[in-house]
Length: 128
Image 1 (cartoon, rainbow, N blue to C red):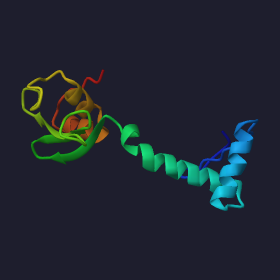
Image 2 (cartoon, one colour; image 1 turned 90 degrees about the vertical axis):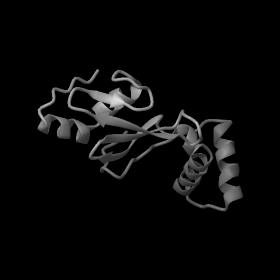
Image 3 (cartoon, helix red, strand yellow; image 1 turned 90 degrees about the horizontal axis):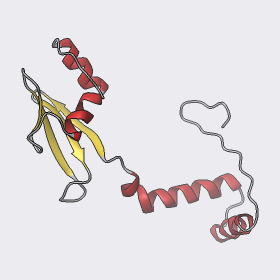
């Protein structure tokens, strides 16, 4: 990969057969003249078809006065479930797992904004 700006990725690509022929057929089918546009079209197509599969399992959803809310995409109902992880004076507590040592608590404690808030409250944060 070459030098890049934060929003830019430069890719240099060589294709051998049979990929080269497939690429040309796709380019002709899409009516595009520029190879870069073909790659963009293919990336966008793949993203539309697979973005849910590629989404992170856990995602920071919200931070509130009680703690942090996390979207767990593996839990039902699809596309996941919002889990509340509480910041209690004695410990961090996951409402869903009824635990202070689950993947939701671990994830919550890995969020930089959460770490910052808890450190300001005098908590010692141990992230595994």
